[in-house]
Length: 227
Ligand code: ADP
Image (cartoon, rainbow, N blue to C red; front, side, top):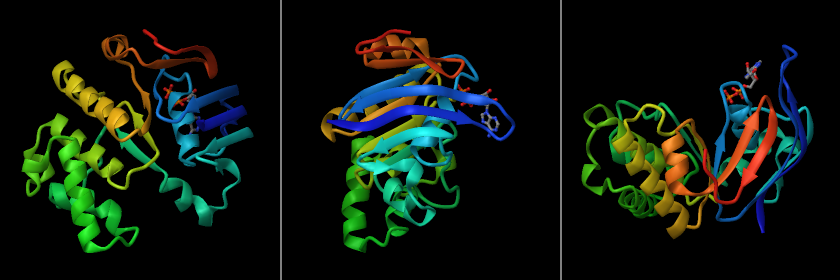
């Protein structure tokens, strides 16, 4: 079964730049997929269209059965509940503890306190940070902050986890720790992961699927790829 289907998608920005040309792509449930390519090749645009930060100019994007481009603004929450997003710069709330940062994602959807506690502890356990519940983000290393951001992204058990350069600010050792966490989530929770990266070592070591974009076009899709 495909979780994501992209059909004849084009994205042209208002300034006239075409970031994606006629993209066709299917991503199976449970896959772990890297998206690579030079700067300006359309990687971020692709990710942004998957969570409806941007709409395609042409074509169709299906995520978990939802027609993303056609969703009315009022219904975008239905899509957002199916996904978690991790950015390069963590985006944690500095005045909230680790626990509160992760719980926040559930509070906004109105989850009950007991349910929140169980899910937050499970997510923090999955990223190896259960012992740092009461710390504040600025007392954590970059790698730990990113693990909190991952816990926040998976706490509601999304089908799809989008990661835009999650190791971009981290040294090689911390980057590999993050990759182990993501691989674990993919294998144990069955979460489908799409990750944009520039890091050749990571792509070559992990041996996952690799999508290569070049100047807005898909130029390669390998099942067990290298950079
Ligand atoms: P990548 O993530 O691979 O670096 P992007 O998707 O960010 O590539 O960008 C692809 C192309 O689209 C680039 O030429 C970029 O300048 C352009 N672009 C990206 N975002 C916008 C935007 N909001 N408005 C106009 N052009 C944009």
